[in-house]
Image 1 (cartoon, rainbow, N blue to C red):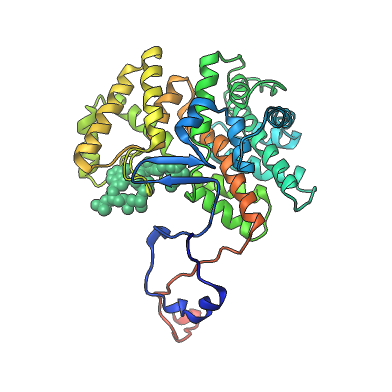
Image 2: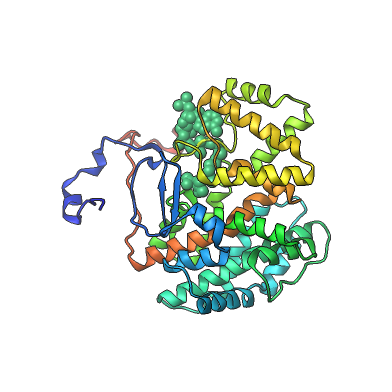
Amino acid sequence: MAESLTKEKEKEVDLSEFPHINQGLAGIVAFSTTKSFIDGQKGELIYAGYDIDTLAENATFEEVCFLLWNDRLPDQQELDSLNKQLRSERGLPEPVLNYIKSTSESAEPMAVLRTSVSMLADFHDKETGDSDKFRQNKAISITAKIPTIIAAFDRSRNGLNIVEPLDTGSTAFNFLYMLNDEEPGEQAEKTMDLCLILHAEHGMNASTFTGRAICSTESDMYSAVTGAIGALKGPLHGGANQAVMNMLMDIEKTDSDPVEYIKKRLEGKQKVMGFGHRVYKTMDPRARILRGMSKKLSEETGHEKLYEWSEAILKTMKDEKNIDPNVDFFSATVYYSMGIKPDLYTCIFAMSRVSGWTGHYIEQAENNRLVRPRAHYTGEKNLDWVPVEER
Ligand SMILES: CC(=O)SCCNC(=O)CCNC(=O)[C@H](O)C(C)(C)COP(=O)(O)OP(=O)(O)OC[C@H]1O[C@@H](n2cnc3c(N)ncnc32)[C@H](O)[C@@H]1OP(=O)(O)O
Ligand SMILES: O=C([O-])CC(=O)C(=O)O
């Protein structure tokens, strides 16, 4: 059990002179959680008791959602009921749809997703409540609508008809159906479902932390998810999957040798996207699973070259820096082989991670204390005021 500073002890410590700063909050344990456990040395990831390999082999994304919201797996009746509720919540309010249709061709998908989720509050937040059931209903509603937002935006920007969500089928099936106006095959549905499972939850990552900090002010779930989407968008976090694909495209466009390309980046002190992790010091277990998927799909879709380059990059990063790939590295080629546009990859991450964000929101709200760390002041003090015309 981690020891926390008591409120009495806090008063004794002069935090304004606190000498030790953990840049990027590295190593700071700020919350207790039952949502996930990561052993960064062993490369182990557990969602609420279940190893990621077990979930990848057996679960559906909807079961994982239930697990993250309830800390246990659903029985058949509970799963049927969750599926029914998710399906019934897929439609978007007209003004949100109109906003999506009004966005420009060059709009950033994550920015549109962020704004759309924020707008949803206007249509649901009139209901108020403080119970676990109430929060879960909101989590279900947001989780159900995110795929519809992404698909509607992509079709709208391409001048295509917006496809209404189905009131049947899994989240993965319905998303691919709305995106392509065509029912996906079993393999495509299974691949998407697996990607959703693998991205659902990951402890106190930057976006989940953002969401929990917002929840801690007693703000609503839409605000927390909107903030979390904003944090996920950055290339050091969820935005890396798109950056990986851009890098592979650049290698192709410039007719570069992938090994030389990576060495040049490293020499120039540039980061290689999809590598490194704050917690994992070995291969990310999700990257291991995605690596196998990437190999299989690349071969099946004639993109072997991209997979071969990925392997060459992986070896170079290991040899040169001893840095392993994270979840974003091989997910890029998996999505590419599925025919998904690179600028939607981070949105698909959000479509999954919303289950973890909302799970953490529920957990924070149940046992809340305002998140409010301190900053060590390094500026000047007691400066004399100089009138503006004399500065
Ligand atoms: C879903 C996710 O969010 S997973 C992460 C997705 N992000 C990426 O893939 C972006 C690339 N990776 C990175 O920028 C980092 O590895 C992070 C942000 C994920 C982790 O960052 P931190 O824990 O702060 O590690 P930090 O950035 O300090 O790196 C430590 C050292 O490894 C190097 N390093 C870490 N990642 C990389 C990388 N991808 N490429 C090259 N060098 C790297 C750093 O340059 C640094 O070297 P130095 O000590 O010589 O300066
Ligand atoms: O945990 C992190 O820092 C990044 C993250 O969200 C993940 O790896 O899934």
